[in-house]
Image 1: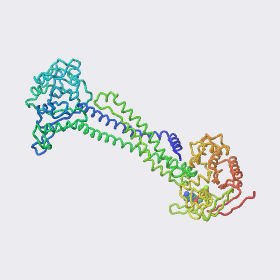
Image 2: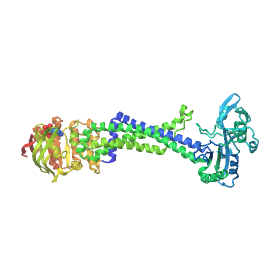
Image 3: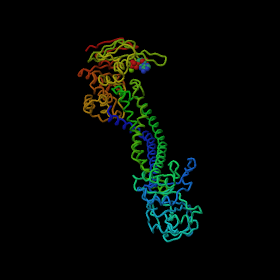
Image 4: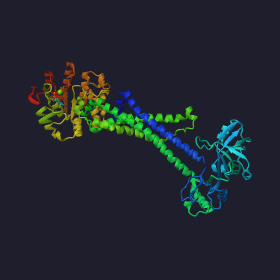
Length: 415
Length: 225
Ligand SMILES: Nc1ncnc2c1ncn2[C@@H]1O[C@H](COP(=O)(O)OP(=O)(O)O)[C@@H](O)[C@H]1O
Ligand SMILES: [Mg+2]
């Protein structure tokens, strides 16, 4: 039987039982919509994480202290020891051995209760040097960044991220105001342009001060600690060379000959991206698989209704066989009917899932939260459609084969 | 040409065996018009199903145009039904929610034939139903439905027409109409017709009357023309 005829018969059959066909399609529709939406949510989270990591700065490499040396190779993790010094940063910045590094900055973190007038806010304070905006890719929106003189003279000045400004100042112009960090006065000299992104580790929730001032006023007597060095490679292609150069310089300076005994660890932005992406992919897969279960349930619904249809149309099958329908003619007819059911359900499910994903960010409750906007991916749409048609095929085979194998006489005698 | 040699059919229902046919010999030449008569349960439909390749004999042999049907598989039987045989049933057996034209077109679709629409229309016209081509079975009278069924049986131009009590569900006027149509097809197009009926006056349209009793042929008479 030609496909056109099979489609005609399939649509006629579906139209003859509109309610039943719609309910059956609903099963697939919900399943596909769930897959599209949940995968879009996973994708959205992944896109957001990627953006946040990108906003760490272009081609950055993080250097963390580690405890490998002398501890029998048992690392105690990042930042637990204090092996990085300002001299290391200066050596990297002298750029005698590292042509692929543009700039390096030290980072000294200090937690802090920040107050302005009667407002309280908590944000980490980052002590660093003048290359911070360049390395970490921050723009100044207002005022200016601190200067080499501010660093040398331990000036108590800070530059604020936009989140801090919003929370602490409201509509007041922050530049020129004095805030207190852990009860020490600092003067605000600039504000960073917002980087966007939200949620954990927002790049806008920052307070940046000269590292010397942080050491002098906020370190609580812990001395000239550097928790990490951030270096910026000249381009994405030179990150690997830059890492090698960094390793060479630091091993030399720390007088370590065996690289496995290094007292520091490197992590590039790409490393972080890779890690985050593998987590995001796993998340998307889990969400997709959960939604996929509802697709299977929808498929069973199709099988059920096709069995009913075959029983109801036994006599018709007998007639068709009497006038010359072969096994595959009947099989094709019912398979196509099942695939039309599931394919239509799938197409409508794609429409619904996409609409929900697109509309979700406009729902006030979601818009105001830090929930990442879902991102519908074309492959997931194609896959969902393919899978829904495939489900019709898979769950249609048994009923269709049952129809195709009916004995013509018994089918004709059926009432 | 239809040739049955000692054809038996036994139905097995659980432990009970029903012998519907017990060794039937029958030869139907091309162009003949045979009425098969007999009481209910005498095996008429069983015989018809075997002749129509809808079923196969339990024992004995059946040659259709010289081919032994016993050796054919289900799909080959379907092809024979499609090409060589046209069925007319007591309950019309048109496909519901499908126009008369499309019903008539159906055998051509399974045959993979060309020019299906015009051929189906021509068949409908030959039974005087061209003006009802777009009607669904529920919109046709019994006589019209049976004429559509005859058009469907004719559309692939088969040599043999098998009719199992074609007038069983019709009033007497429609019955005569249908029988005249069948006689005409036999006379003018030389189609072989095998007709089942238990009514004498319907059988009277045939050239030959075969009577079955308990699965055996008891009389076989050719009527004087
Ligand atoms: N599919 C079947 N299964 C079991 N018994 C059957 C079947 N078809 C027919 N029979 C039996 O075979 C006998 C002949 O039936 P049938 O050929 O239909 O008779 P008729 O058409 O002359 O009334 C009857 O006793 C009937 O009950
Ligand atoms: Mg009968």
